[in-house]
Image (cartoon, rainbow, N blue to C red):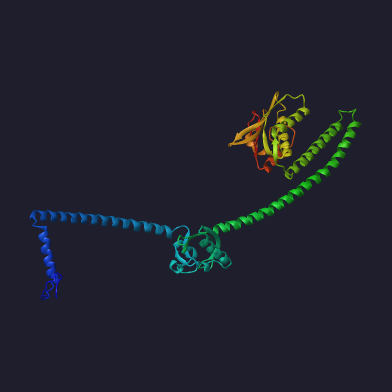
Length: 434
């Protein structure tokens, strides 16, 4: 056989392969040959540096271990705290799956249902709902998972004592869409109060109907009595007038004095009847709602009073542009009576002053009518608006119907009226304008 150079050669015997151990030994020798000789001091420095790094690394591991231990303790404390908050919350907490099976529950929910918590796990919540409310709860649960927004409903639950518990359920699906978090709020007390309130409203409506019927009967009685009294009064007045004309030439006779007393009595009785007839309709009059110029109504009332007694010296001070919302006819009665009352009680004043305007009370506008009359003791203020009640120490004519009518009208419009006064310092009547 020829080689590449064209010269012949013989194949010698196959050389023996080296073992792994021999290879390792030769490699270490080669490494030492390449590295060259090392000084003892350099090896010592490297060893010390390596030991230092190991010690630093050990300290770092110890510090990291301490931090991890502290973090674990804090996490356990926080977990305990939130577990307590979860278990002892004032409302029940449940975790439900798509089918309404209870995956988790807090102690409040278990107590509300009267079932041990470990027994609740896996139970279908819909079976605890009272029969009539189960379809509504099933629709509610489907809505919770389909809309992914907080939903709420009210259902009756049956606890372990077979007692119904009214609850409001609020639920929100988790981000995974596999479960939802639900809150149970006991509304049994609220339901009971609502039923009581409903019963009270029904009873109140019955009482209101009875009162309205009684008022109608009273008004009918008022008109009947007034009509029946007017006829005999007219007869008495007529006969008294005839007798007075017969004895006109003997004015000093006792009979004439008796006749005068009879005539005065019939006149007073006629005024009482007129007052009754005037007072009754204000309770049932229909109301309109429109803007009312109170200043104009006050000027009209003042003009009418001046026409009745043109010789009286009375100064009216009426504020301009006073307006409110209400029934103009009813407000005309209010201002006519208030200004008329001031006119009457300032009769003894040499120069009477009557004012109408707007003030402020509790941050809201109020109207007022003020006079410089004799005034009254505020201890008697609760009697001012009572019909047929005359304040002690007053000698003016009247039966208190005017102020009673004013109070009734303003109260019907949702407002109130009150008086402020002092003996010898006049009186002020204030009333709400809203």
